[in-house]
Amino acid sequence: MNRAGNPTISDVAARAGVSVPTVSRVLTGAARVSPAKRELVEAAIADLGYRPSAAARALVSRKPQTIAIIAGNTSRYGYAETIRGIEIAARAEGYTVMITVVESADEDEVDRAIAATLTQPLAGVAVLKFDPPGVAALAKIPPHLPVVALSGVRDPATPQAVLDEAAAADELTRHLLDLGHTTVHHVRVPPSRKVDGRTTGWRRALRRAGAPVPAAVDATWDPRSGVAIGRALAADPAVTAVFCGNDEIAMGVMRGITEAGLRIPDDVSVAGFDDNPLAELWSPPLTTVEQDFAGLGGRGFQLLLNAVDGTDDRRYSSERPRLVLRASTAAPKPRA
Image (cartoon, rainbow, N blue to C red; front, side):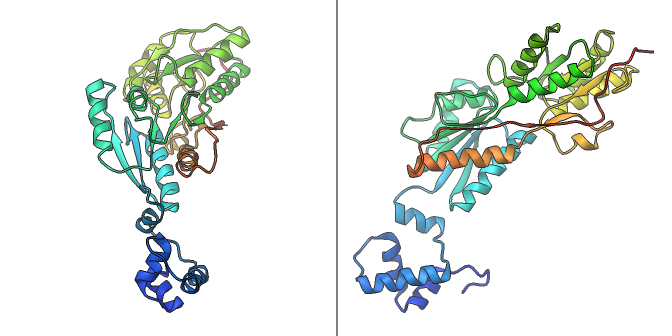
C-alpha cells in the first residue's frame, strides 16, 4: 500500500493475484474479463476500500470529471467561501474544479469567459449568481450542460441552491423595529438585478409594520464607500438604525458615524449581513446575519452532481441564514 495509506490499483492487483491491466479492464469495462477474475478483483476492491481516482472514474464512466465554477469575483468573503464549499464537495466525489472569473456583464467579456471555460470537457457548471456578471454568464451556458446557480434570490428557471436572504433581512429589520426604532435605514451593496433579497426583506418588514420606508442608499463593494455614507447618515437626527448590505460596508458606515462624533449603538444602531469573521472582532461587535456560504457551495454541488449522474430530479435547495445579535444594536436613546 502507498505511503499515504490509500490503496492503489497496484494494491488491488496484488491482492487479487492478477495484473494491473486486468484490474483496469474490470474498472473500465473496456474488454471482457473472465467471471472468476472479475470476482477476485471486486473482492479485492471491497477488502481494501479502494476508491478509483478521478482519472479512473472518468475512464469508467466515459464522462468528464471537471466542474467549472463561474464567478464575478473570487476575493470577497461570500464568493470565496462559496467556492471553497464547492471545491470541498467536488474533491470528495473525485471531481476536479476549474474557476473562471467574469469581470463584467459586458457581452463580449462574458462570451470570452464562457468560450475559455468550454475549452475543457466539463461534467457541469456552477454559477455564482450574486452579481450582474454572474447573471449574464448563467444565460450563456449551453443547454446541453448540467448547470446549477448559487445565490440569494430564487430563479425557478434554473436548478438552484439559495440562501434565503429576504427572510433573514426581514427578521433583522423586525429586530431593530422591536427594539423601538421608528424605522430602519438601508445601505445596500450592488444587487445582482434591480433588487436583491436583502433589500426586499428590509422593505417588506417595514411595510408590514407600517413604518416609514426611507430611500435605500447605494454603496459600492469598496468598504470605504461606507465611510462617507456613515457621515451623511450621522448628520440626520432621524437616523437611529442602519441595516447594511454586508459587514464590510457596515464597518465603513460605523467608521463614518463615529468620525462624525456619534456613538454606536447609543446614538445609532448598525447591523450588517454575512457574518464576516471580522464582524465579532469589530468595535463594537457587529450584529449581523450568519450566511453559511460554504454550505451553500456544498448544497449547490450536490444538486449539480444529481443532475450529472441522473440520480435525483431535485432542482432547488434553500437555507435560511441565522440572525446573530451583538453589541452594535440597541434600543434608541435621545441624542445628547
